[in-house]
Image (cartoon, rainbow, N blue to C red):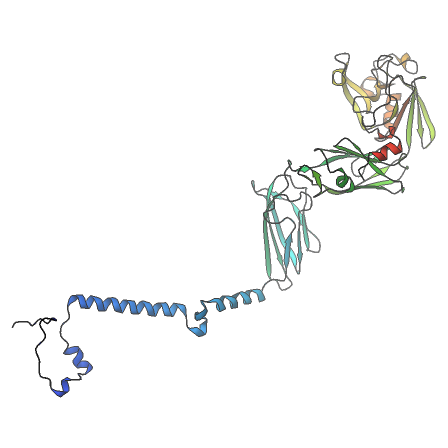
Length: 443
């Protein structure tokens, strides 16, 4: 049978219809429908898949009542509110902010409010080495057990719990201020020492200080004696403190060093923060008279002993002035080449030596000189010698004076043919008048 093909140019022929054929039933639409082409079947399949996809997307998005109409914002807000409501009351604060590059090496620590710390771990970032520390007895703070290193990167993790047992954690990574961008002051005397009445407080800074006023104002030195204490700058890297007269015997001197974060000038910042105290012992001032080659030792104003000495020779006289014992050595080497005397002497076992100046003046035991020179003539290269024995044994004037002396005791030299010792040559600022001393203060 020839198949009829319809097109706009070949209209289908008229067919007669019975009345019931005008509106066919569903069953009739399926069973009685003409066969479709393959292309038509593919089109229907794609349409069905798209419909299914649309249905699936609608299901993932949720309905309007579930918050779907606002892209899930109400649902997220509800979740955030629930999490906030159940959050721990413990609030942890790390003193060194996360990402800081100039953190303090002294005041790094952790504090918590609304709870107690349970664990704190501080490590060196590069090596993983743990820095020891301790949580306070009440659980509200933590501090490292050692001073942190300059120019070092650290990581810290702190954990705490509130009264309901809910946890809180804080993490931070920070770097301490670098050596290039910080300054420190080495100081004397050390904490807890007992020193003589002439001992000044002396700071030597590792960088040039141009902001002297601020630096000096953040170092406060006070005495239980009530004496006024004033600072004096020797150049740009040394700052000494002393009262007008020697410290009162038995008094306690306190240094409050609050340089952490203080700008020293030229892009450098202080990193020190501590309190140091020392005690002034009995008063001992010894006077060396070069005319008589004798030293008179006074303890609390009374003569304790007169000791024969041998001072500097006429070619190498001893400095005049008030000199403070800054170091004590039971035995030391004295090499003339280190103080400008070439190879004139090199004694490797000088007993009972005590430094009086940074340029090499000592009061010390002398075992190589004839006993007859002591009390009679000056034979040294500027030092003050006392009779002693090789190895420092026995009952000798050198050993006696060493044992009776403290760092900070004063040795006064008079009637020498040399000049006055410079006030910054050792701890010898007592050779400045009080008005000249105060003139060197930055405050």
